[in-house]
Image 1 (cartoon, rainbow, N blue to C red):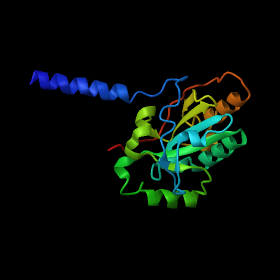
Image 2 (cartoon, rainbow, N blue to C red):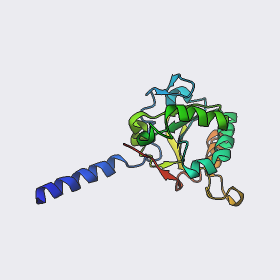
Image 3 (tube, one colour):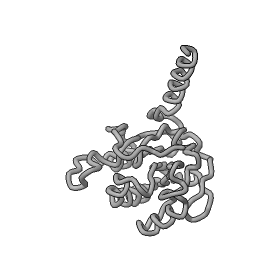
Image 4 (tube, rainbow, N blue to C red):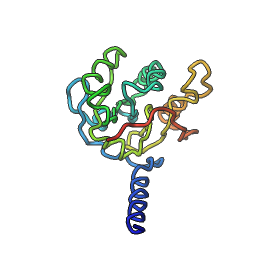
Length: 197
């Protein structure tokens, strides 16, 4: 019984270690993996990479925090594009794939939200696992060389857009493209847990 308990504990430690979030300065993992976009094309994170980098956002159709932050997501995507940074949204909710986070539901949701950037299926939550992503929405900003420069939240108040004091992701993008040191490299992402199988 003790051996069984020790084995379970050991496996639990391994799983927790594997889910550890990427460290700042880490190279983009699994950047070449093709994923099905709402356009029905297969694209990778590297396909979304622009001259100054790429912003990867873990998102979904259902989380109240994603829905509440939708306007901010679209504004941030536009700002990223203006600064030659690509954007790609990943839906890693594999446990809801036959339900509200199905491929068809993703297409419908993106249409209503007027997405003009890739929104892809992260099959089996592989990319989320590689990133150590745990929430929706959760952001990872990579520079042109594929090094992680910022991770975390869109801003400092996901509950109330009217009381935002600092737009973390926007500031990080501005600093990145002007060659400045990024003043806030990590922030706490608040949202719904990614629903892995």
